Image (cartoon, rainbow, N blue to C red; front, side, top):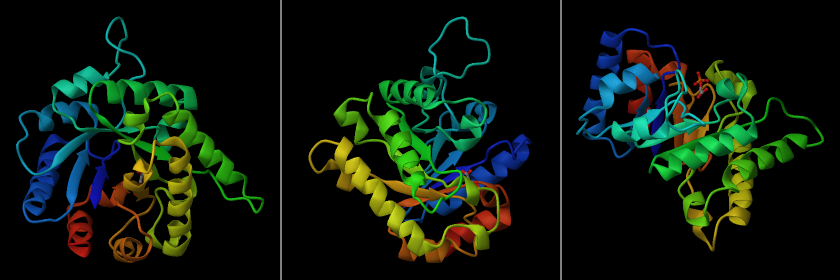
Length: 247
Ligand code: PGA
């Protein structure tokens, strides 16, 4: 499995960041899982350089532009030069700040052009009985993947993160059986967009209130390939428990 710790802006102290990274490195030595840490942009700079451990780093976002007169932009080549392997793209908290599907598509293109694997976040705001949320999800995936070359589409990791489940507690996360249905649905969409049978190898993560209390059940029953974890990944105790529960 792939376990992505999305630190968001929770970690603001470099000493705390270093402790969390040391913990992740310790588990990564023996874990069968891929542990990916996504710190804020300044901390990626401080932590990812010369990383030769078993953990990998992700950017929390990547610019829709390339270099030039673009104050405050963190571009794909900047992350690539640090050895960052993944970038979260289209997180709902970035979409809430103005990232449209078109902007997300631009970011995807820049990431893959610089050999950074995009972790594309998709997810509905709410569920409606008519099932319109399914078309919403389809559009988010299609618009982000369509501009990519077919061989690059196959590299994209999808993180299904229903907005109604983000930042809550384990009892408000998605039920494992509902998640299993969504995983099937996402694979169906990918099968239409990817060449040949390559979509069967696409990885799908779940994010939204993954905590030590629910990680084991979701991992066991929903056929996902990993997790994108926010608040529970920035506390040493819960992060340790998360890693222990799936090892
Ligand atoms: P959460 O965040 O684990 O705090 O719900 C997940 C995410 O937004 O990636």
